[in-house]
Length: 178
Image (cartoon, rainbow, N blue to C red; front, side):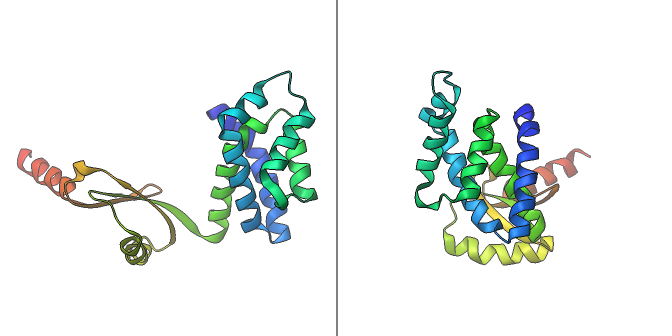
């Protein structure tokens, strides 16, 4: 993983600079998400790794997956990755691009872990409160961990807000042991 991220970083950074200069960050974000999904598909991975599949066939596979959204820039980017045998790094390129985009927009990733499933209305009500607490815009992902017993735990970068019952019980246990 570390090696593929190292390989993907220059592509993500160069594409980010091009997209930023052209004002097309959102468009490239969508394109890269599509390309990353294609690259992660088992059949595409097999084609990428098969020495009998030509570079042209690999490029056509990715162009076809993008449908009508293919323009000269996207086509050239896919061709560049194919020529350098880097199509398999597309998921990492997409992830690094998103991180750069969020940094530019002042948005941070937030991992919200809840004891119970949260519906969209709860998440929409919770995110503004968390943004005020962490003093930044957040892109929230929600997961469920029943071991929290109740409440939520939120991780944003290197900061954590633990408002779970499990967290409170752990604090009480630590206090009793000391």
